[in-house]
Image (tube, rainbow, N blue to C red; front, top):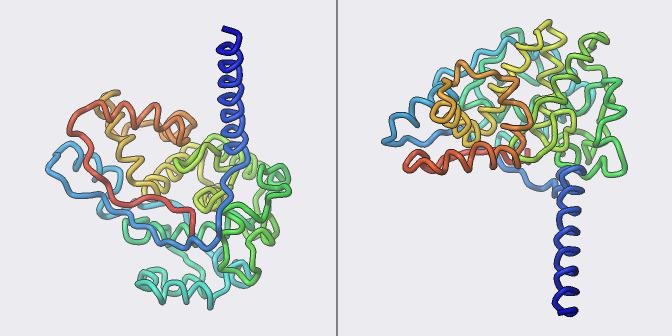
Length: 308
């Protein structure tokens, strides 16, 4: 009996150690090989399920999401500062399908029209907003969870290889691309700390990956342009939905079927919070619940990789 008891104690100790490692990894954030340069797609699969099709069309409108946020001079300034190397950036898209028509001069001219986010251009905006959120200065970023010894090893830093420097960590919190008043910065930090993404359990303020940096850049632009807290949450939900289509289509199905709430009536702040957007909680509160409903979920193409 003593031997059995001892083995049981060892078993518990090993499981607790695994739990500790998992917690430490979640707190530290994603550390990746920066060579992962995948271009994602944002494409809901056509199905025979009428409800699924209706919900998917609301999450990813065919005509896109009309944002209130304007890029302005932000991308041009990133090029001037070397955060975006024009030759590297253009070379990446020359190998692919090229930049969308509406973004052909984004590296050289200020953009004066509000962003129209579509299924076709959503992932281009990841790579335009990512270096913005990474490099734009905020006093609060001095206390960012990535501002430590692992700074150069996160997907958001080591993964950004389209600047003049070899590692994007060199640009972290370095330039005042978007000047923010103390009140505007406080708003950005408040929203950033209360929004998540379904590739990890970290908040937008913990910008350990490209999507975290991109969303932080979007929030900074929005706050500087006078958007309210509610408007920032709505923008954040729309962009996250196009960047993580599979997750948010399932979330919309959950709210429709389980909560009897249409997507247009959900509270963006609630959906972007830890319970429904952090990956561990999303799996528990959304994916597992939706999976209980037979025939509701077809396979969905598209998703968020943390590469360029």
